[in-house]
Length: 189
Image (cartoon, rainbow, N blue to C red; front, top):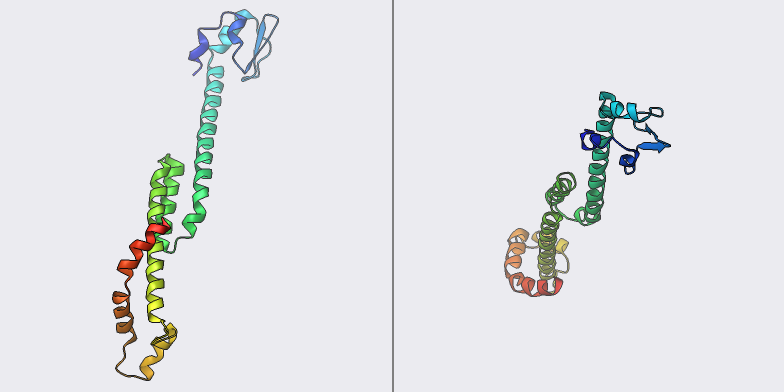
């Protein structure tokens, strides 16, 4: 409300820091309300009146909304920098979780570190998974038994006792990924 400066309506010098009051040769006019030039006797009545208080409150509300929109925009710009990394995640569930955190960060001003930590965790898990799959595939397609995965899948046509699922599972267990992955991850981080 306009009560913060109503008591300061005595002299023209009181209006020097008020952006919507124009002064000229002892008179003032309120640019906020669109009034004409007011002499000293009528200005106090105007600035203490209902119309001026309503206009002043409306302008303050708009300024507060503008500030909150600027805050939201700056948060949104910060989260957009993460968007590319989030979209590159392999699992849809991880992408949705990170996007929900980005939304919370932008709208509710949550710390950016929460989203960054979760995203880093998911990226690390994805690197580990991709590394494990690469090790597994290289053990299946090592050139000693099979040259590619399709050969392994088609091998039951030659040997009825061969189960490609069991073979792939056994290779996964014996691939050495439990030993290789921790040592490789030291260099990836």
